[in-house]
Length: 197
Picture 1 (cartoon, rainbow, N blue to C red):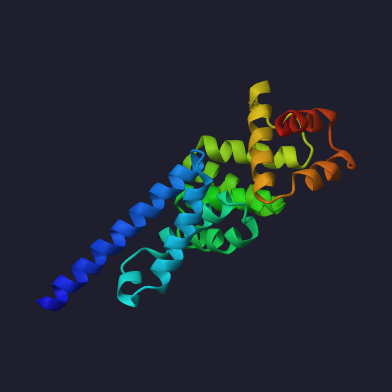
Picture 2 (cartoon, rainbow, N blue to C red; picture 1 turned 180 degrees about the horizontal axis):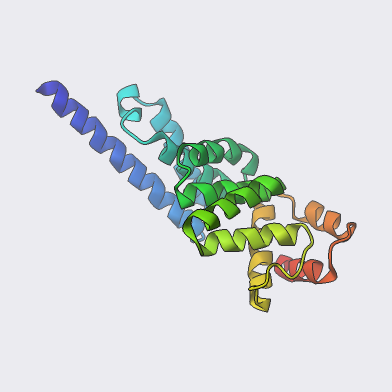
């Protein structure tokens, strides 16, 4: 009986830690980037803690939290591995697939990003985050119109998402210069320049 109680206590402790890290990521996404750094530290602490505690959490959820927190703090390259692990472990989880897609978009891995967004749209229909991501991929390739249903404000939404991803990869100037030097359509470049401001 003491082992069962101990296991229950460790599970409860791990659940509280996971909930706190998810809360920190939500705070960071709402504009408190310091909270993301605390979430990354929490993930590392949980992984380094008692193996019994770490074993009582869903590793894919832990990877997703880590990926989102690293991405918010501008460490897109480091976010790629945990985002990929979460998407592979949970192929029917929209958040895991969209997060992996956004990290790939930030790192200019456009084929992978498009695959993630297309997969979500195919499986789950009109998910707005996946739709915005797919449009941002098309914009990153210099294409406008983004799709047959896109409204003018959808171009601006895609541009804002793409610039936010590029900022998290610290590559706005490089990617925008590459688009200017390519055969990208003028409307795509104009939308991105508006979003950079």
